[in-house]
Image (cartoon, rainbow, N blue to C red):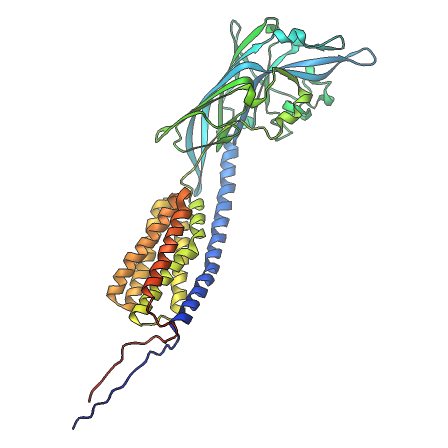
Length: 471
């Protein structure tokens, strides 16, 4: 007679699901350590890229900052000994002026890194009301109008691609010259230290060993009541260009072939058009906005020049990978948590425990994803690198899930992990809505986990189905 013998085999893992979930949460936090190391690598590569880009930018002329044209006239005062001494400079600002520019932006490479450099043609126009010159001065003060000069300022003369020319109607074009220390009409001011004068004269004195002020004499044409001039100047630079208001009413127009401008400074464009072929932007800055007076002494303009900004345009490099990789690392714990929760749900549903060491391997694989993303982004761009790194990581995690839980779970894991990394790519591209999308995704992940584990005995042990044998 056959005797029935029933034997129940339990899983070797007797940890309760509740304790296992707490362990997984701790492992998710632990995975912040390799993610932090990856962030240090990104920071190091980004710093190296910035230094290389600075070298490219300096060779091209750097970020240019322009002001002018402005009429400068030396001021003499009578000292106690009865001698006339040059003590200041009067600046006559144009009643209205305009700056029109067109920039051709290209990408210059050095090693793995690139920088946006530009070449451009800049045209200034200015209309001066000279009738006020007769009212300036008294018995102890007078203007040396015959020594008047038109000044033009730029932040880096290395960007000059040719000579700057001044055109006056009915007169021959005159070439601008760079100020030389000890220039005769100013040599009595501050011991000849023209650049160390306060106010507008040191506006561009970033490097005090050289002057970034260009000048041309116009004293011979200041006898009329008005002065209309034009300035032509070819200029190169990198990263950005900024125009400082130079007239009581200043109109600025910028055209470029670069499709990704970034506007800043104190004045944003009132009109702009951005297409895949480039952009145009313009802004008129009235005296009410710029606070530019009809005229002022140089010594009174020191406060005006401090922290004064104009109409700024940056040529933004949207292909730079470091910003995107750094942003993706901010969400690393969230996406590691998504994958861990997926394995935990499979583990709960199939009653097939996964060891903590396996979770660590899964977390490290996700951390390596960011290294792959960074390495390939420097070579083939962020989008292609993300597809390549995400595809490799999703396949690895999906195959691993299939080997642990079976083919059906493996296919489900591929679909879930593919969605997770697609969500990550979406977060990288919608910066303005990234927080909202990330919050909704996190809420959905927690909601799904709560629903699927609603009947779990959190105090019980993981159990496999009982194995019953009959003899």
